[in-house]
Length: 312
Image 1: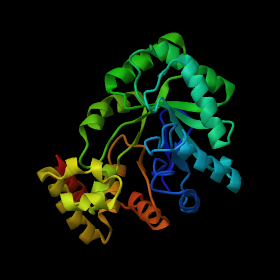
Image 2: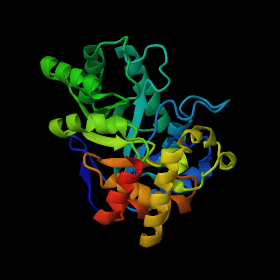
Image 3: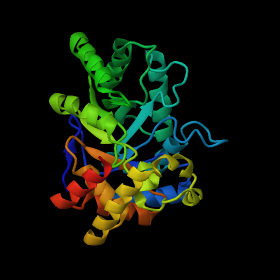
Image 4: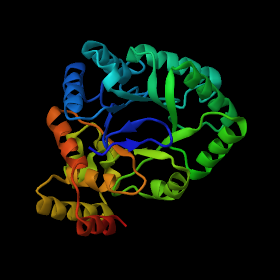
């Protein structure tokens, strides 16, 4: 399988990152263990979570997703086979990306994950109240101590990345090696604006919402379909003429390739320049197996062009 480097760090991953946002939400612990087992069996290794997943569920303790993943890591004894990705400042909470908040956040995540290091640690959201030097200095200390292997920035635009990277150069600190922007067949503007900077500076990109919250599975084609999932409320914005054109193109390519729309949508993301890997979540082993097929599909140029034009 084609393993892809994350920026200039020594971390390399396969072209699929498993989204852990559903653990503790639409996926319980037992089902989560089965999905994680299937993910590793399929030849993948990178699991994405955050201190804030899924804190939006009433009654959930903080970091429920990390807790489930940590229990699985301990039960399987396979920490050395897994790349763990998590994030701080998930809920834009008090402290943001200040040094004390980062140091406390990493200790909380390490405890829940039942590990002594994190492979890739993200700033989940920018913090305009904290300067880059304070944030990167805190990360630099964590990397030197061995608690974090590499750092990344989620939801940062090119200007924010450039400012952070310049600070890292001037102050001789560890830089952000990876970004995590939203990117899929429908949502392209954020990554399209960021990509030139990433390519020029050898920064990786693990993109989220690769299936547009499930819209690109083809299950949601009208307002009446939105009740099929707890995520339905976030899908309604895709039900416009552009969204329908993308689904039509997906349907055509799916028929030609004998694959599902979700598999085609993932294959399109993987084929795009500058993408290290897409994040996609699964609520069953069958869905996980479909994701694995998708990132291993090689779409012909005609299909890639059709899909790109449909969402342009």
